Image (cartoon, rainbow, N blue to C red):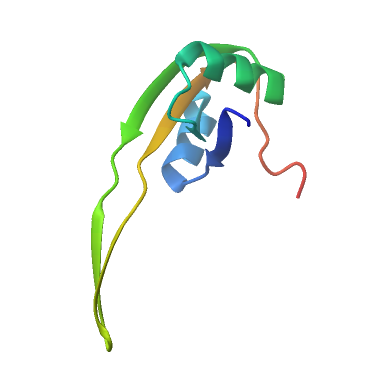
Length: 96
């Protein structure tokens, strides 16, 4: 299974990628920074300078419906923010 699960494409990360060459990915919880760096370099052919990781904990959610209260949880996931070398670009929209 791949270490990189999917890129995080939000307004904030698009701005970071344009100004600071930073890209965010949702990654496996067990992956370390070295594995993430190698996976990004192999997948996109860029040079990675730094990798910052964080674990977002899941949250409890409640919905009120006609049939009653429904309780659930959002999932816990690990996010990696990768800074790449100046001049390199990752294009997420090339295969659309």
